[in-house]
Image (tube, rainbow, N blue to C red; front, side, top):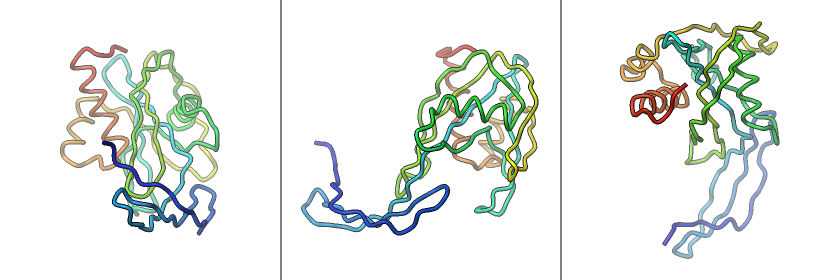
Length: 183
């Protein structure tokens, strides 16, 4: 039998530009109730661009909440109702100055399931072509091409700490190794 909690009521606590926060009361499967704090987020799109020479495009970006610069795959938040695939294509161009001829879905990733509704949609991209970068006014990052094998080692040695980037690199490496996708 599947586990389920039913929302009884939801009280808005905060409405921001990127997130909102509610305090919910939920009925548990044993009949008791519990409070749940939920961060609501429109989600994001992430793309793992793979070049014919075996390198991938990544970015180094300062992340304010973590107070450090991180290695990440190109990605961005979705606007309400935005198509995740179109957002992935947009972010690839904006952050790396790249367009792709071919995309393969790497599925969905839930970065923080304990309290956040964010879903990150992921794609691998190939048939890459350079185009001009066009970052947002408040976006500062440096794109780089790194061998997939090096990025994989960086994940294993904790040099890459971003969840979507870890998931994307490990999933692509495994699918390529198993011959389940070709780009």
